[in-house]
Every structure is written in C-alpha cells, then in structure tokens.
Length: 120
Image (spheres, rainbow, N blue to C red):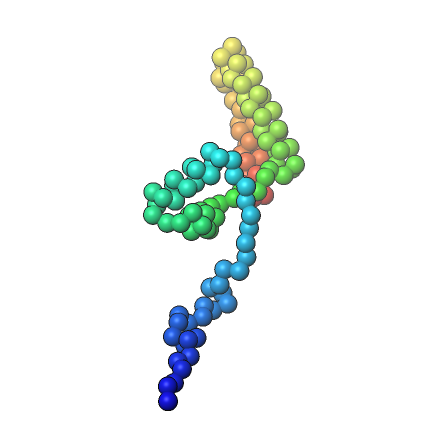
C-alpha cells in the first residue's frame, strides 16, 4: 500500500501575522520618475518594491509650518530689518549711541528664536 505524503507539511512554515505583507498601496509615477526609481533599485541590487519599502521606512517627513510659526517668522523678518537700520545708525552716529538699541533687539530676537524652537 502506498502512503500519500501531506504536501502542506513539506513547504515553508507560514509567516507570523506581523511578517505578512497584506496591505497594498497604489502610487502613480511619471515616466521619468518611474525609470529613475527602477534604476536606483537595480543599482542597489534589490527589487523596486523592496527599494520603495526601505525608502519609506528610512525617510523623515516634517510637518508644514503652522500659522503661528509663520507669524513668528514674519516678526523675525521685521526684527532683521530693524537690525539693519540700527547698523546704519551705528555707522552714521557712532556705535556707543546705538548700543542699548542693539542689545534690546538682540534679546528680543533670542526670545523669539527660543519660542520657535519650543513650538516644534
């Protein structure tokens, strides 16, 4: 009598649920973008899918500037203009006369930059 071997036990063991790739994302590329990605994957010696997976895993996406950050940057631009005016005064009237204005403005700029850093 001949025994029939169970074919399911001879294969690779099933992957754990966390290792299975069950999600699919469709992305459209222009011709130039597609062939550029394909070439990069070829040079790396991996498939295009693996290249895109590793690129997505190692990339860093920064959030857009919020309106309050744009407001702070606008203030900083105004302070830079004031600093230029103070330098003109310093060249015309002497550095000692505008020293206090410069220190006050430099302090305001430092405070504003600290606020921007804290808001990240």
